[in-house]
Length: 206
Image (cartoon, rainbow, N blue to C red):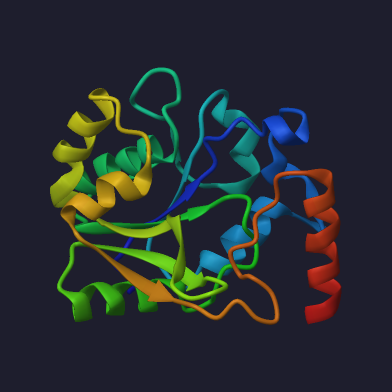
């Protein structure tokens, strides 16, 4: 899997945390983003950060910073497109994306996304956890995306598409299922209360 670039999506505006970069907040002696990078390293080849605004604020992480190529920050699909555009220029055929505010995602995420896509014969795979009462709860920011669909994605975004699953399902999206115990590995930090929960998870898993 080490030929697949990994793109960390940090394009959100952190409104529920009062603005600013929640990924730069401290969590157990490291920033949230440092923990995401640490989690992703070893699962992918090149690592990149999708973020808007002044890239210098991320200089300490020594990652290429890819801004959205579309105006008005149209959501995580724009970050997927930025990653696909970069990959197309660097000879990669697909990318994996992860969220910058989700520090506990599975250490075998990439391998299982690739496996799910290959078994289903689909170009896209999305992470999922069991849904209470049956079915799956998909986590579409954690996905495997083919470079061959970047033109289609750009057209969809320019046409107003914003929901990841709405676009992904058109082309075929397998689900890579992960357990949600003892905690949801796709738990993301949006509020101060979430940060307290993340700190508790660190203590519980130390």
